[in-house]
Length: 95
Image (cartoon, rainbow, N blue to C red):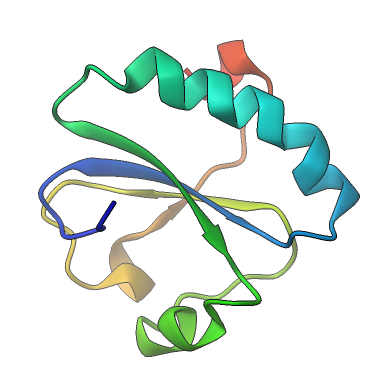
């Protein structure tokens, strides 16, 4: 799906070979399923290595993998409007 500012987006930026990312993936899939019927929220994943150009285009900094960012609905400038998620990385914390 497209990140186009029409929805609130919780974005996981991952690396396919990252162990922490692999551990988070089942939780992320459960989270996406829990919000799939919510029309104003998108739970998304982005391969930070494969999509490095997209991250650079939006000046979105990633210090490590996985990185979780919240992009509020209407956000057009990812660099200034993205909010770093620093909470628990379990289903309850992410919800």
